[in-house]
Image: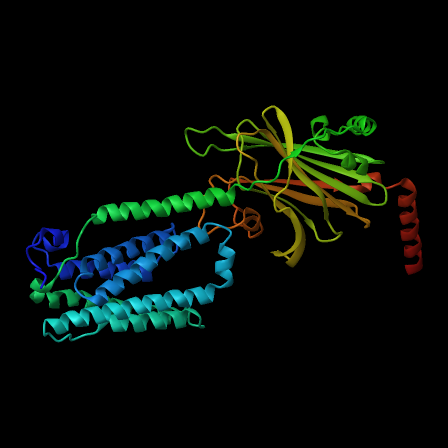
Length: 478
């Protein structure tokens, strides 16, 4: 029979210092259960506390695994939970979170089943210890903990999920369970000499540091990969339609923006009757005392053509320091007349050459929102701004069009969000966060609201025709 008392190989911190090893390991177990089952949904505590809790569970089971086969089984289940926890961090910090949300209910019940299995295995392990010491276990807190876990899973998908009348009794019930589990260590104080410490080849502090480091590195790597979108760079061909360039420039179209366009885009502006150009400069505050402010130039250009055709060109250009990440961009307007995207491109300089790439995730959709007078529908064109690393003179544009409807006033809102950092849990697309209004009060949101007055270019004959029709109607009414 293995010697339980005087083997240096099996010495552990838990068995020294006059502290009963059962009590200490049960305290680790209790706090591990609390941190993994009761979480707080702010300041990232919903991710920090479970990480601490699962490590406490591991350290507790590691010290007791030599006691019997049931503790070794519990130790194995906790190792599986440790692996699942890292996989979970990888999933929720990347676009893979969509898969998690698609099977949220199934995955949730699988994790609940794993927690229940752990509690029941630990219950059997402690019963084996009591039976071996020929002692009666007066209370059964781990069984009640398993029942509590089942009740929580059922309540979470019921109408009582957010009821305080259910929440308060469940918390009281949980406190009673943990209190009885704590007294279990006191009952085992009298059988101190039965504890068989497991071999300790690496200190608990090193295990905690390594595991937390792996979690942090996993999160950082996944965030960088997910938020730095890369697109296939294309060779840039400057426009060659000199006649159109000269004509548009005479209409006060900024030349540096003209040179970013393609010939087929310039040809769309053939026959333009009026241009309206508005420029704005935005200065983003420095993120830290060691960084400098960033400046972005935003230019909105309306190009009006006959037959009620109107093009809107939203051009932006970063000045000074560059950006490389998951910024969001959008154009908002009325749902009628229909707004359509003609093209969107990103341009930048690298190694002295101009390159161009497509706008990542550029799309358009109708979004319903509420205003003072009730629900309203607006059209939103949105995309992501993400440049390759080590590039300069970063800029881009979105060209949209509306046509086929008589209007006297057109209003559009250009939005740009610059992310201060690129680490978020869970992962969410920046453009979707813009639609949801997450940046409404943020200093990182830049907005340009512009109006275009079509009445200024309505032909005089048309105005006279409308005036005559109104006069005729008034005479008929009289």
